[in-house]
Length: 399
Image (cartoon, rainbow, N blue to C red; front, side, top):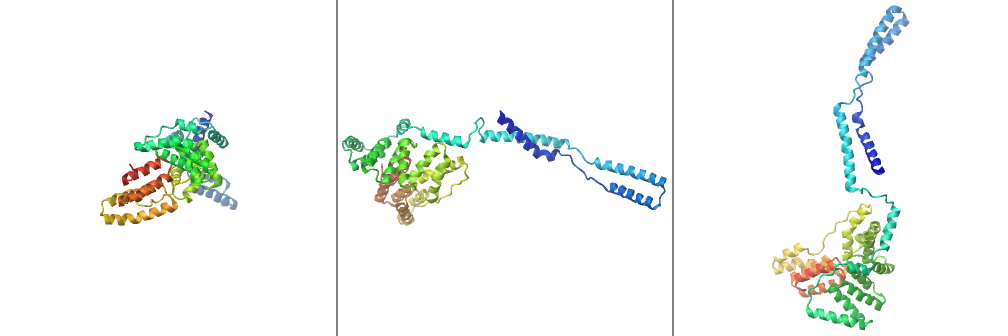
């Protein structure tokens, strides 16, 4: 209640300052020619008396008459100051009502009525508590929706099931655990894939950072997009060895963004968008950074990026061309995109465009090779895999 009273009082004060000129009386001129004339006549009369031109009785009579006229002229000047009109009063009252109504509406729309004071230090402490008390990996996985069923051949499923039975008896078989992690990912069994990938890191003693990144991808996918304490632990191990690692910086930013520290997330993601080559993790940061900046109180507009490589429109247009024209049109774009992906990496959309382009060109072997390579590059990212799979199906290299 005290907050509302203070807000209303401040609004009324501001409204008063704004409408004061409307209510202020209209002031006329302080003097007029008549007043100046009569004052001049009084001065001349005093001079005449001093020079003996006019007698005392005659001078007194003249002074009285001039003074009377001066008084009348002065009263006329004072009466020229007028009070505000009734219309002005109505405008002033309506202005006060409108200002108060707009202020209350704006605060109710974009403010937080009823929220208590939230000092910055207290908010940071609450965010830290939220991060420390978040669910474990097992709890996140238990709450996650079941993965969609994958339409895979029966013999493939049987082979994967056989691999599942064999691998516990071969704890140090690096190739076997790597294959199991890959195939569990293909079947969208991210929890099982993460467990197999953990065995890979145990065997290799986490020698390869890419293996660690793949584990984080799988842990986050299994947790339905959440960064669990177990995933955070791997992320921090990666950053301890490579502080500029793109996936690790993205996931640490995602953790802070989800635990009410968008300012930290923005600080982690901004360099990725400014300096890092396009990748799946950079694309995820790009999707969220403007919202994080807004919540952190930072004025930031995402720079536009041009799409490189043949677009869906390019491919659709090429399908209606002759084979020779189509090959000439797409061939150059495909070559440039392929070189860039090989040297710099790219987003899932870039890989999908390359697969589709090879399909249009009829080079199914190249499309199949890119599809296989892309599955490895985006292992643990179900949305990316689905986009790539759709492109592979259109190119005729996936079921």
